Length: 457
Ligand SMILES: Cc1ncc(COP(=O)(O)O)c(C=O)c1O
Image 1 (cartoon, rainbow, N blue to C red):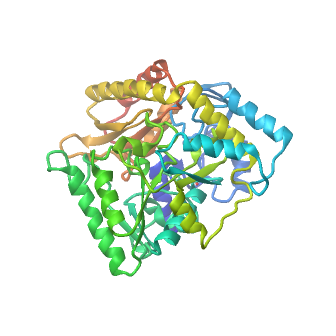
Image 2 (cartoon, rainbow, N blue to C red):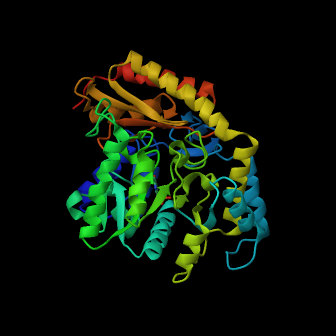
Image 3 (tube, rainbow, N blue to C red):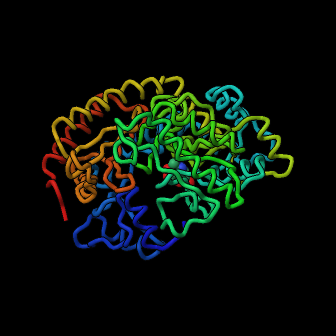
């Protein structure tokens, strides 16, 4: 993370409804003693919600706090097949009981996992490297791209988030001020047909947004960096959950490849089925040169991957090598393999697409009832609604949005907040969610939005 601390925290606040001061009114909150201890021994301690929630147990889509209160997890960004899925838990325990080492010894688990991953990706995209977090996987992807292309420039979206190391933090443009950007970063406006420079009715939006990449390419070529890669999250989580126009990625990929760069799909949010297809890029009929993923991969156990083509991997390996003590260890591999096996055996990508369509329909019905909802968008079980002060002007309503996750928590539903203006409510269910779970979200949201004042200072 770079830049001034003020812009850092503002960016992160927009991303997730957090209180960065670490100051809570300890008389008015539950668990005051726990918060005090945490604040005393944590550096930069911050928590979701003004009255933070103390979770002690999870099962499927449900979370339970220390008082036995039950919450529907509609924020879920990690336990892909539901909290504490017994098959994943058993796989972790059995392997931990038997052996845990690293990838410099032969072990079948990591080979099984690599084979299973290759079975989910487009043909040719079948060679993997393993790490522990999305940040590490992103950084490794850049290392491959820079090594293979001989260039160093990276194109990312405005308001992007890709992780937390120095290098990846600099690609995460939502977390710091624009004037602190290094010259190897070039940004493009995300294809936001609701708030962006080109909107519905402004002609061919795929072309108009893709053409913005030309300037980014020229900027990197003029500064001598050249183009190593274009990196994009296909669900545009930090930009407020967007649906890009149909041919956007096709056109951008052509431009980036013509400039000598590689196309990297950040699948940390969109990957492993959450959007109703196995990988987010599949919605756009493109095949990236490299993909990286993490969060849902181990259903809560820290593990991540980079998957690429054999020719890219071989060219990179001529001059570089990689080892990660924990990445791909037998326990992590067992967790990820079990998570993926559950997805397959329980037909969870199909469930996500089906329940996701229902979620979308319910959110659109909600927009018919509340004019503060300006736009509904997303894919599968990853949807967002954008709150505006006025549908005509589309002026964002971040003050109202900022209060809603707290109020939803009081109704027993956990949701998130995202987007450049901090005015997009984000709903992200695990793949096992049902229509009934969606109805629970709908009822709570309807009540909370109905009671929310139109503006808040
Ligand atoms: C789109 C995206 N990429 C990368 C990351 C970084 O992943 P991690 O926090 O596991 O390092 C995140 C984390 O939120 C993310 O949302």
